[in-house]
Amino acid sequence: MANTVQVDILTAERTVYSEEVEMVIVPAIDGDLGVLPNHAPLVTGLDIGKIRIKKDGEEIKLATSGGFMEVKPDQVNILADTAEFPDEIDIKRAKDAKNRAENRLQKNKDRINDTRAEVALQRAINRIDVANKGE
Image 1 (cartoon, rainbow, N blue to C red):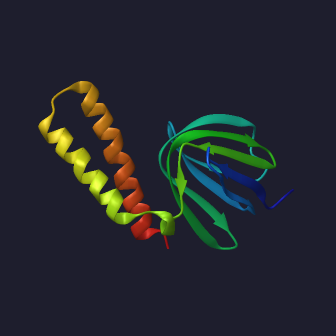
Image 2 (spheres, rainbow, N blue to C red):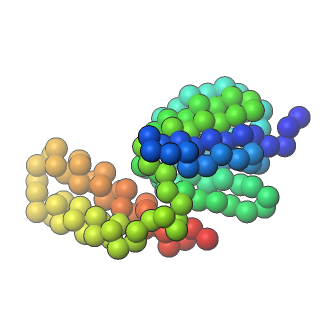
């Protein structure tokens, strides 16, 4: 029985991460989902949140804004809309985006714009959280 599983995290722009790890935890559309080696095959959507990778006793965190994950017993492929390590996040830009989204929610009562602003707010808060607590 293998002790590790290959995890590949890709976005449209680049390969973000590609390593053998002990475990990966993702924000699946119906809650956090942990994947260990020899996991049953699975395909699921991802939500805005943190991807957490357990490797060599350490935890690596990435901010993601959604995507898809395919699980095989020996491999996990994550196709993410975005995936950022804490040191890649521009905290000022994320805080500015959070403020803009909060202002839109306070000023507008249009449901379509509210939904867009709420999603933008979730993304910004997630990025700020990962950047501040990524270590």
